Amino acid sequence: MKMFCFCHAGGLAGYYSFLKKAELAYVDEVVLFEYPGRGRNCKKQGYKSFAECISDACEQIAASGVKSNDFILFGHSMGAFVAYETACRLQKEYNLYPYHVFISGQKPPVRVIPEHYRNCEERVFDFLKKLGGVPEVIQNNKEVADFFMDICMKDLRVLQSYVPHEATADNRPKKGSVICGDDDAEVAVEELDDWKEYFDTEPEIHVVHGNHFYLNEKKDELINFMNRELLKAQ
Image (tube, rainbow, N blue to C red; front, side, top):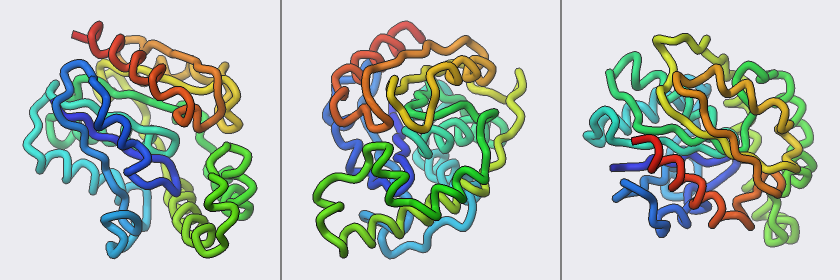
């Protein structure tokens, strides 16, 4: 089974390379989806809208030859919205149903406020620093910081165009799970229950100790949680 991973705003696919090394139930290949304009896709034109991002993700996943219930989607932060909306589009337009969808570090779509991402773009460095997403190597190197901030601002503009579809019984993933840090400056723990309306089967919600980038210190806890959810999803 393949697992496709979608990263956070301003992120590089390589940040999630630890998942390629992890022993995950039923998973024999992890595909790190790289957004255009960075990493191995640095020469490609960035997305102009969130809808374009979803279309690209769906086309790549469908072209990979996966079959229904034979692939998994994982997304963190911005990537969580990408994973979720990709799952819904794949079901509706490609008749491809994911085995499981993992949502990490993100509020439910009903809580989305586009203006928030416009405000974040205006103060992008402070925004990312508050989330814990600016490593010292970036803070201490202006050239690297400028490159990183430019990518992040473009992703925040993509998020500003995100219009969540209405999750209905005939167009939402069957199974999913939600994981988030208890000190996430972007997501309040009490908001997470709203994710229950976005899956056919009520998702397990797991809160770990950490900030928006809890993954930095809690990789093992994330992997253990994923394995528990995959094994019971059969």
